[in-house]
Length: 111
Image (cartoon, rainbow, N blue to C red):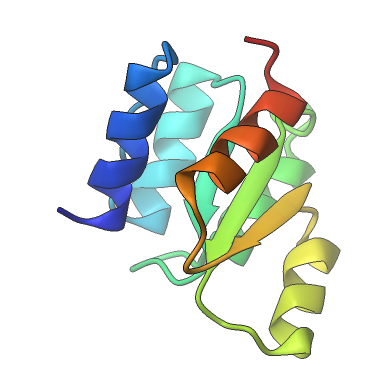
């Protein structure tokens, strides 16, 4: 099971409607089309990086207010700083627990 599949399963079991997108290019297009309430995006994506997706969504007035959480395996402080500077609302450092994920989601989406 991939991380994306695991996240989707947990979110769906908790009653959230969730979809998975496998690339930065597709994520940006899907976000524009679907207008989600929250985006959870990996930092290292094929195509556009997670930071690129965040910057592009933040530049779009119709998408700028959507909370975005970046997940990353990079523990380097400079990467975490880039994530926040890109406009992400929060980040989760891999590996993280599903309880951590649900806490972050709950802070943006009342359940």
